[in-house]
Image (cartoon, rainbow, N blue to C red; front, side, top):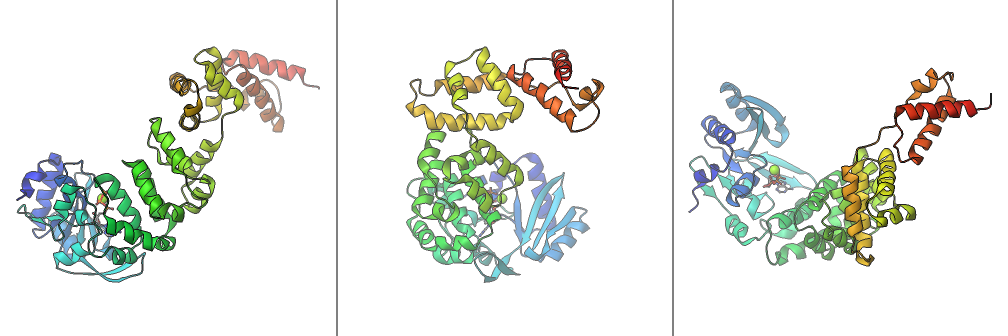
Length: 414
Ligand code: ATP
Ligand code: MG
């Protein structure tokens, strides 16, 4: 028998105190979902969610009466957020699905804990822990967690038809908690229902996919997704695991965008379809620019002044993260066929990390101060000096750049 209250000892003292306070105010509430799962699995807790049979207005009122800051963050879903010592605690009224269409659910409140547990996705996510330390496990979630078995609550096909996002959630949780053979009936159900992914909002798809790409066991998980036909559904233009595997083998950081570029045959098309943020899309576009043959030749020469110059020039144009990402991609692609097995890429990365980002030392006002009237010529002049500065490996300081500016102005036809 699990002593639920002993489990709470894993939480930081501040969260423990907040939960005790909430239990004084709402004695029927229980901890639910991820927090219970992760306490049992002895994993770090990201957020603490509670559920309660009381309707949301009653929760709001009880918290306010007790002097706890309460924010009605999602009353229509039954959620009130208590803020204690600046940390949020979501308290959601027990729910029952009245109607589902594969994307949204219309819910009503219930006082039946099992009904609420039944609408949760996986048995390991359907556990709850009450104030007396009692663990409530209606569907064998504790045993599944211990066995590394990610299993749908109830019939997998029906659960996916209620909400197709559960397909992607399955792979996210399988990656994190799954061990051994994945659940056959889950995979079969997913394969038969993949077309339902088309009805989901691309924002929900991207938010799950990003977490899968940044999560553990990414290669194994993507293989499962490929076999179930999921990748073909969510990646217009197709996907190839071989390139991603080579990238992962280099030890590249688990940046979801970097992995996406290695995975998708048409990364531009994918980011457009998934409506990723502007910053994310810019990052992907920048990763897709390749190094020139000349740059690659310099990389192969190893550390030295010529390499530093070339890297400084690159750094003057592009963020370090982009260049590092492109080096990881190039290493994944080229290392297997290179005589040094990619050692030169590691040297280049180390050199790049050691360099400061060069700042061009002049601005428009310097051109004006040199006597040129305001107008398009100013930017043009500045560009010429900048070009000269880059050609010299971005080494020239302000004084040398001013001298070059004077020379360029002097050479101008009057
Ligand atoms: P994480 O640590 O990744 O946040 P979590 O279990 O807290 O894991 P959330 O996505 O935050 O996951 O959801 C909280 C809980 O709500 C889940 O544990 C699950 O019980 C339930 N849940 C969330 N989304 C769904 C869904 N689409 N279908 C069914 N249940 C869901
Ligand atoms: Mg959560």
